[in-house]
Image (cartoon, rainbow, N blue to C red):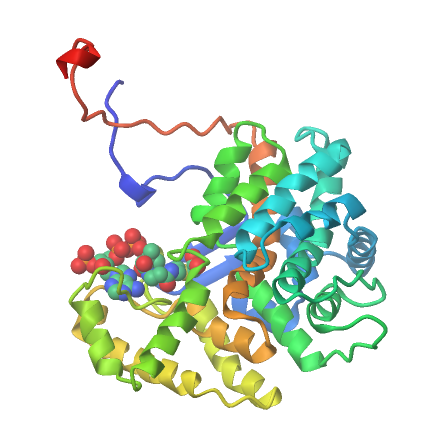
Length: 392
Ligand code: CMC
């Protein structure tokens, strides 16, 4: 009673029980609802995984069809919301644009804001899953000054997203099925990761019984930071900088080890994994295939592999158990697909959305959940008297 335990960064504080995602950081194991990530990556699809995370079980054929159909009927954005995109500066970072538009959903769809009405929660779930790819594509088109395309609901969610990002009006868009499959796989790998920074943010905001749209909007801001989802862009910027420096990996690694301010090996290290991130292993194994398929030769892929090799054999990284995380190789794939570097974290957000929704719903349905309200240890001044201005 009365004693507050300090745990900066919550390295050892459980904030909730959860049935959604299991991680064994020492063994490098990740499972959604009990299913190993490797099996889901190979056999499932992003929407099936979304259903699994949110509803707890793999869907039957009919259930998946109904879920998919329902999502495809909600992909349009309200025309007034579409006009928001005119107001942002052209060079705006797409993450705050994404978050602002998601926040605005709570003003356009006021009929699905009640956290305790199951039909409304399902409706806001479907709306978010359907509209986030449209919002993301619009953020991209705005940044390159190209027309916003209406969604084509005869296509799958991922194909439609690619078309809205890269297609042109009045021109058929030829989907490369291998590219669509690769993006679907990357979304699966990002779909949940238990109580990470953005998910904890979604839960904390939602713990005040804040609606799903607003809670997810906050999560998007948390994801944007370079220590979290923003690392996927930061890795490519790091590889570009090393390349511009003549590809001198050794001197870059030395700067990391010397802890030069602001210099970290981006895409390495993880709060929970003290072993190879199983998602990174899958991404690395597919990076070559995807680049070949897209006929892209990127010298930065070789650079990344060399960098990984140097780090994995160096005492600094070995003793701290620092391994590549999911962000280390994804950027190279996104780049090969044609996405600009600063857009990579938006792709992470699309992938993570079902996890945020599942976690928010689990919290709302949990009778044991309470408003999130951490304590503190006060280390400031003791009581003192106000000093008038002329005495300071
Ligand atoms: N490069 C160099 N040193 C590192 C790195 C790195 N990437 N990561 C950790 N360290 C060092 C750190 O300086 C510390 O050293 P010391 O014990 O001498 O003080 C030690 O390793 C432990 O690290 P920490 O910062 O206390 O660990 P954490 O659990 O608080 O941080 C992390 C985890 C992911 C924020 C961190 O590893 C990091 O900043 N990595 C780079 C950014 C990154 O790739 N983030 C993506 C995370 S994975 C998916 C996602 O969320 O997007």
